[in-house]
Image 1 (tube, one colour):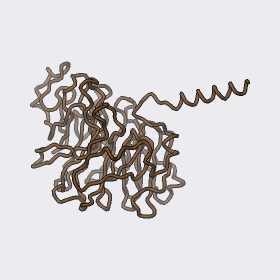
Image 2 (cartoon, helix red, strand yellow; image 1 turned 120 degrees about the vertical axis):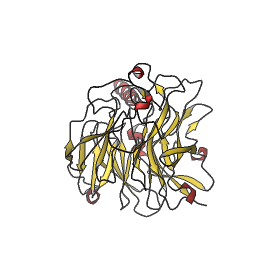
Image 3 (cartoon, rainbow, N blue to C red; image 1 turned 90 degrees about the vertical axis):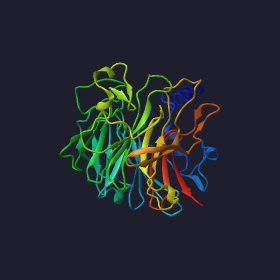
Length: 389
């Protein structure tokens, strides 16, 4: 009898411990037990795409966040809700991953991953690491080299998206440590950049509340980034933003002005909105835009060339009776540095009837064959979108 009680207590303890406070994060052990191509918990038939496109599963990865793809086809995937960084390989060429490696563990919100000259770069909240010659040792990763360890330690907007620009520098954002506040430290609410070895770090642009995705125009080389709008200004204000950087030192408004013309009720009286760079495109409010890429795919129809794709993670700061925004992939058409059209590309990750999501897009990247890979941190999935004509 005592043994039965002990077993029952252990079962209850395990069941409770497997539930995480953040309902957007799947249980790591459960997802890791699912095969890489499993369809469990997915509703692919609900996804609506333009004619000729289809969506499939490339892999399953717990809390899949940012991605970095190498020329050899190794896909690195971060795991912000856990503590790991993964690598995925498709060894038989069927465009479904069949090998999964754990590159690092025990990290604090390892959201950012980037790849350059054979090395994997990983960003924690306050630290940056480099794993050299990583593709030759996926099953036995080397000890990482510490590049930086003095970024702010704040958990609020502390996770980082990182990427290398066309200038060869590594770009690292530092989110505001709050919903809305001023800070004397110019590093907050900024995007910084540095050489790959960590030298010559500097603030690149200011007034950026929290960007978790940026990219560069394939023709002009200008940086474009998404920015998450502030909370608690109502269900429909302010809009989230897509911004364009035309020169170093620009200020994009936070915390004084939002969406180009919305003065902050607490700080907006200090400066006119005209002092700051307006968005290239206002997005819907509270959509939490994250990953962003220009379409460089030769496999997509020509009318999609250089369109801007955005992974909208989805809202939380809206009343239930008005429903969520985001939870989809959208497109922005750009002309002369400004958005001229904003439209849906992939919807159906959110059930509009029940106002519940079964997946939340985070990052997107174009593979060598022209397909689009999309990460999702709710169902723990890497989707693959292709054009089949």
